[in-house]
Length: 152
Image 1 (spheres, rainbow, N blue to C red):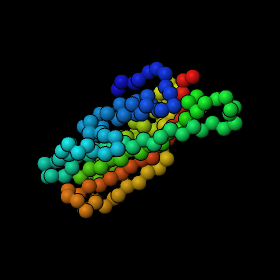
Image 2: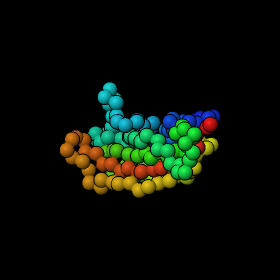
Image 3: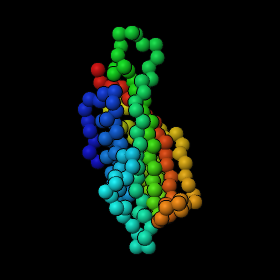
Image 4: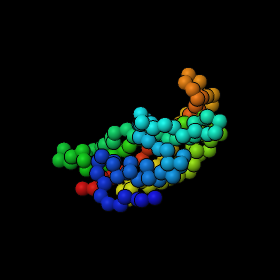
């Protein structure tokens, strides 16, 4: 893991990079932001099933301070970010075990020196495979949240 140490700002890009790096060895490194790129052929099991992969979706930061003075700008206020990590794959067991590994690595992780620990806020699972496209895919996802203080 390559932890990016240094000043953070209200964008949360440092924290995002550290979260991505934290998960980088899971699912054989098959981790993407937002969606699988169009030019990627998903890795498959010998039986044709899709090997697990991870999709991360980050929301925009939200300023969470109350009672501040009119002189304080948004960039200096404490920020909160929510994000989702989805694990998708060809069999329910591999998806479940990969999602468990995601939770072990993320919950209580501090994504920067000025951030609190990441907390889980629930999630969802599709225990029955999606058969609307082939091959069948299973999915589990977790919702996470953390706050941080941008550098002044």
